[in-house]
Length: 115
Image 1 (cartoon, rainbow, N blue to C red):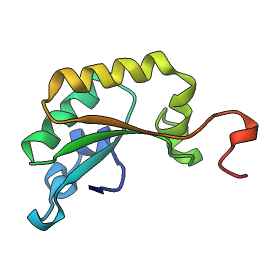
Image 2: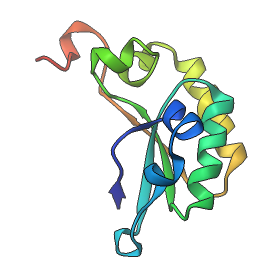
Image 3: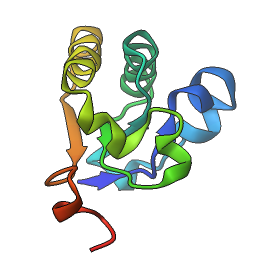
Image 4: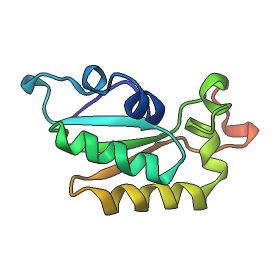
């Protein structure tokens, strides 16, 4: 299974979706990794992924970058499990391909990325 780099919902919905979704048949099985926290946007992007031939869609809840966390993307979502559940439900309801979640082992200082 090959995962793409993380693509934000904003990039797919308001940018060059064709460029972000382009892939080669030799890359299968292939998962599109999404960054976002708005259930409706994630559902729309999951539909785009399925239509583009992806085998799986993955919600990134593990990226530790401050840049993405300031936009409620990545590891900061681990502190909002109800929101993550809502996002996953919206994505699952939108597509028939598997929906998975990338996450880290914890969010407290003991389990920090820097250590």
